[in-house]
Image 1: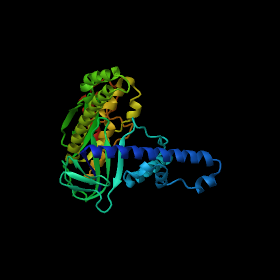
Image 2 (image 1 turned 60 degrees about the vertical axis):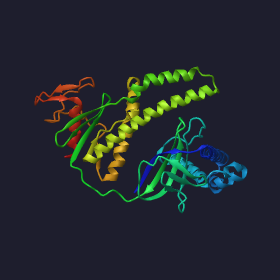
Image 3 (image 1 turned 135 degrees about the vertical axis):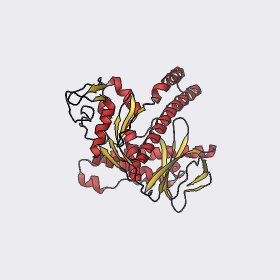
Image 4 (image 1 turned 180 degrees about the vertical axis):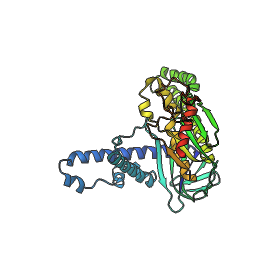
Length: 365
């Protein structure tokens, strides 16, 4: 099983300079190879035989033309080439967007390198990386297994992180006692009901909304700074730190909640939501983007895979909030504004969201 562990790096000045050069070299090589592919296609697109017969330049050939590419780790450049290949495959096979050029100011600053015969290893609170040696890092989580690769990245706020990919044995399977149905919302982030009949509403922490006032002030200060000035650079970093703080709070909440649910339940039923379509509603777009339903679902899925849990996704058109969980009567359509209702055939009073979670739970039976 492959598992990634993310840590905070604490590089010194020389190491920060090396990282900056490597980020730039990887970005430059990616753009050069993308431009080379586009030019190759334009030149031979009318002759399919030549288009596939004439090979593209290898990433190593660019080192002769651009000597500065010899400074960073060679595997970082090799992985840039693989990233471009993967982008093309995703475009052709899965209909994603065509690969675009990386920007110095808008693309993520990162590079990936591989472990070859112990070129990456951990010693106490330091991690050894190719061509740079040992770098201090916050070693807050231990692991057992073989390090396969690692990805070094820098956030817009200037913080450095390393994600270490480890090959390790799977976790011993221990069955969980419950099954659970989860209805997702905006006022309450999640409404759950398990097979013991316990229902719970988990409040939406609204990290963005709570920090919006301070974020707005920071953005206003940034807009008043002169373009290219040092003060503008400082103000930009303040805004970036605010955004990073909000993102970290959101991730912390989602990880803790998904961890709890996966460890307590053997079968988890989720409703299928199309966030992209729902964000067409301008009044709700920001709230839907902030609540991160898709990220929560993603976390549940991979954590369930680790622990041998079962994830069931309800059909997209399954009317979980319209059906009476007591007698199964659908009745008339209930608009979104109706939060409580009484089933006419059986007389059961329903909370709309709890009723939906109960209906989702019934899909496990």
